[in-house]
Length: 190
Image (cartoon, rainbow, N blue to C red; front, side, top):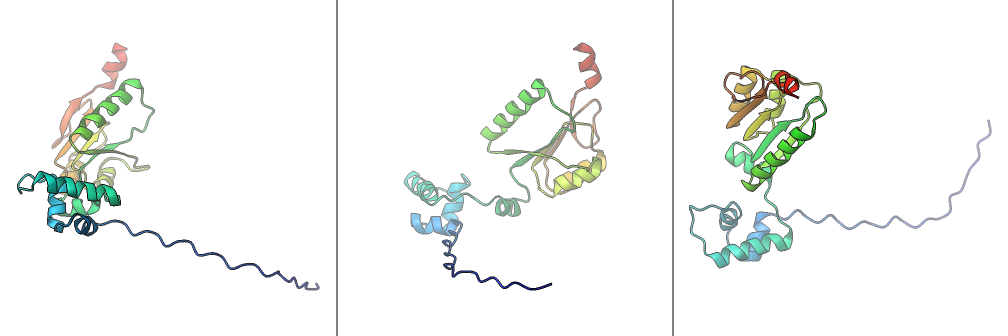
């Protein structure tokens, strides 16, 4: 089989894309606001134990906004031992309007309290294996909408820093708070 040589005309060299902008840090906020990193931490974490003047607080918040700084959730989690995340495993079945409204209202209430609600799908994981996967996120609380975990799963979540584990189901689970919800009774009533 004969070979054919193809000559490619000169093409311009690819242009360099601009270097990515570095992620703003609390040190950048401190530098811009003219304060220490500790002051930035106190202000952005709403620490009441330290007295910081209102003009300084405004200057720090404005500096953070100007450079687009947001606190690093993983760093907060390491320091506190838990996150501000309330984990809600997703339902394995379609949810109706009533449950969707509950999730919406629940999320709104927790957002006002400075928590972040995260819905998490653990495809293929069930029971205590799912609880171990949830624990990796270090949630401050877990709302389990099915009777899907047992006492060992609750213990795993609590050892990982979860302050509350709440189950929604027909029977309570040892070690967890329970919101009793019997789907058979609900279906019968409907």
